[in-house]
Image (cartoon, rainbow, N blue to C red; front, side, top):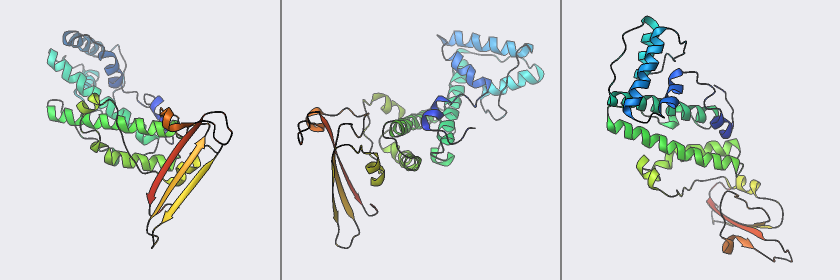
Length: 272
């Protein structure tokens, strides 16, 4: 597995480390138009493997039923399994969940943003509907966290350290925003708040034009509150669609071009 990849590189290269035929099989069979067609396709694959003409690799740790069947067919040409429409759908669901789990695991671990324990990936019995729902809920939340990290990396240019902190916080708190996979499908957008080191934000603000900072410290210096007002020709957060009435100012200090105005407020006991 490649390490120290950026999040974008990890997403782009998610298929590179996987030579498991079962994962590629899912991408092909997911396009079947119905369960009858799916059963026929599975049977054709099993027959080809049984004949010994096809040389494939199935990872020995792949726990799916399809992987077990293929290993048996490659080993001693066992009899072909009987497949029903429902049975073939269960096989497809299982290898799909397995592939998605491997994909997300590779992305998060190869970019070194989190640990396997932080991902909290549950096991899944495809015959248990509750297990399937829990797995889909987890994978849906991982996708939201991945979207957040991609935006932070590509648009705000977060450092690796800040991305790691953001990943840890997001994985621990995303369930409060996305309770289930079905809820994720219904939501038009997700508002997610996460703590970010003020020094990181200040270093990312465009230097051109003006910036002012106001800071208050509590009597015993336990807490500090800092407000930064920054005007720039470039938006501090380019992936956001600004409200022109609030975010763009014109004709300031004799400048004719529109400016983007950003206000950041932070309350912290470890601000600097």
